[in-house]
Length: 364
Image (cartoon, rainbow, N blue to C red; front, side, top):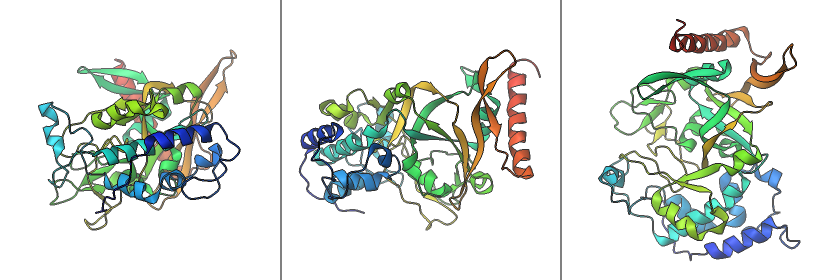
């Protein structure tokens, strides 16, 4: 466990500094914390969060941010439903975030959120069971006990910058993104660990077929509608942060394995392992965003598979196709580089999605 250090709160100073940097001041050509060359906006898209933070924040403050994991970001909640969230997955009590931790977390978000802008490269990791629906263009959801057919031509829910998982393999990505929220014995991302009530193992589904993500270049409108999901105590504190005005979303959670919403990670902090309980993956600093309004996929977006060894394969590209009548539509086209076995796997997923849509539409 990291030791907390007594660092002074300095969000106001950083907000001024960040504003100067954003304005392109001639003297601001080096990192204020490390002295390294100041990265360009394009370079920032490819720098993992912890490295980028070291450009702007002192190491003591980064230690505070990392050490705040396991504390309660909504301790002030009086809703009895939130009481179970006062405990960590291992049963230890979650202390409230203190003022120093809140200030450091706000500084972190003030740095990282700048890069959710037009042209930002984002990833949305999707369950393998949803891949067929995306490739088919339609899927079936349950709403108020009824099955509805919906299109899959938008990014919805939680997304993150591609840099959040750069260089990570599939198992590391699951842990970094908090995709260990499943409670069933077997899941899309994780499976239960025998004899443990809170540890999760990288799912056999992922080990066999990898994990999939939609790679999307964000539009200006989409970027403006992306918000950071935070626990209510931290969300309330962002009112004093001009750089985050209108950029956060209060997202309360319940349950002993409920999300840690200080980092903006919206999923569980249960411990993820590969095969054995001692093979624990660490949690990486990163920031998720919530698409409050679904943002349309765009021609050039791709579907990517990431394996346990970290290798990635482009599965399909979202391609503009011109019809006989001159109309242009975007459709997913499988990569010609796929093997016959891979094509068969994805075609089976597409066929399954088509059958579910037909049945829900009354056609089967």
